[in-house]
Image 1 (tube, one colour):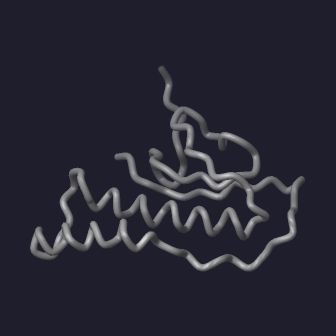
Image 2: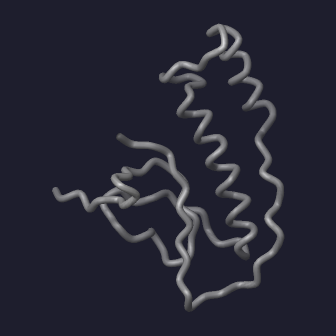
Image 3: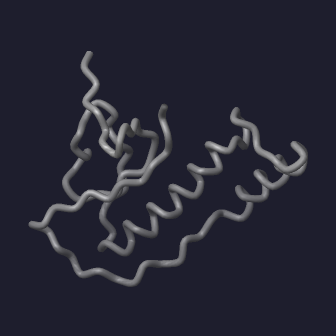
Length: 110
């Protein structure tokens, strides 16, 4: 199963000055579109596009990832690499779909 997730990768060799985490903000126009779909579906979101529950989760994942990256001295936000147990770079916030099994991303052999 592939789920959206957020993982913070941090190496001890780099310790930036932390700042206060900014408020998590969600684009109101994007959120309104989900609300419209919610009403049309009588209080639920579908699992398929457009305006699926998965897409709503991604909207929030991106907002939380952006706030975390800002708090951590504006480190970059990167999508996870499915085939790797390591992050795309040493100090980043990963935001995106990933395969999680028991809390560990497995290496996928080809």
